[in-house]
Amino acid sequence: MQNIVVFGASGQLGQCFRHLAEKEGMTSIYFPPEAEANILDVDALKKVFDNYKPAFSINCAAYTAVDKAEDEYDLALKINKTGVENLCRLCAENGSTLIHISTDFVFKGDKAKPLTEEDEAAPISVYGETKLDGENAVVALLQKYFILRTGWLYSEYANNFVKTMLRLGAEKDEMRVIADQVGTPTYAIDLAACILHIINSGSTNYGIYHYSNEGVTSWYDFAKAIFDISGTAVKTIPLRTDEYPTKATRPAYSVMDKSKIKKTFGIEIPYWRDSLITCINKLKNNN
Image (tube, rainbow, N blue to C red):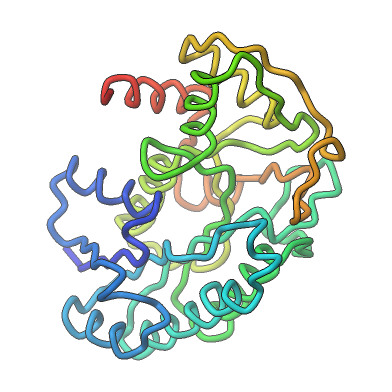
């Protein structure tokens, strides 16, 4: 099988790829540590490409601290754009297909209609803006690429909304959660499996695709589901966005239309609550 290298291997999605690779006995997928594969270090990247000769490069590396990015624009831009440009140039030189992870935050999110790949990207935060810059770099510098936009990622790994709610729900009697921001939770294991499916398909239908789990929910209803499924007894109170101000503005509606990825690659996407049950059961069994 052709070699695959995962950049950003220590992050949530990178750890999900590692889990699937171990589960499926994949021996040609590599997870170099950041010290060896920092996307801002061109010399280090060259060594990675020389060592592994990847047919596919999966970029999970990103600056994702949405609120902090408002104060750290230069750093966010460096990682989300310059780092991506570095990776693109090496992919082009080495004939490697890039699979780049992007975000629903490239959209303004002011219309209650599932977002397609053709809808205008108009980010309303530094994080969204720099991620769109990264997308544009991929399109400008490469011919062989898949950009997957996703959102509301969670899993058994790293820090995420599900694990935070489980921790806080065990500590508190009452939780207040935003109820007027709507999207779809995405189990990162499902996203990783989808990407491996794309690689294994041998498809050359390059371009931008949307992926999240199926269905629609708010952060409040997502939290309620987490507490219900895990048996956590905590009173959950809905909040409006204006009652919980944050440094970065977030899209009010970021439900993505997955028709393109389902039709192109013949995949079935799990319903968000079903995947949430799977994740919470795994978390329970690991404790």
